[in-house]
Image (cartoon, rainbow, N blue to C red; front, side):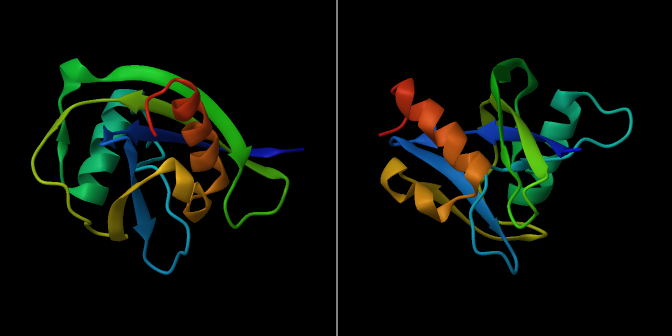
Length: 133
């Protein structure tokens, strides 16, 4: 029986690169976002997680569904998959690493090997849509 980790992710692209974050004590970058808490909608959870991780407020009216992607979960056995429901959104505030986040960076497609498998799957799709270079 495969286990699935259900997560939300915020896609923010600047100069053809995808905003990514790296947690403390982790090697790979991931797309900012996280798991919803009991009773939260996708948008509530995404907004809360992004605020916790990188200190910015997503603008609710700008949030737009992009797609859902599945890949093997980083650091878990092969029975564990992660499902990323991805959204584009504008934000207000200054991007900066917060709480459990060690650093944030804009990762180019050429450097996708720095990212988790699920992030790479999303980057492949973004590349196919000519959204990242």
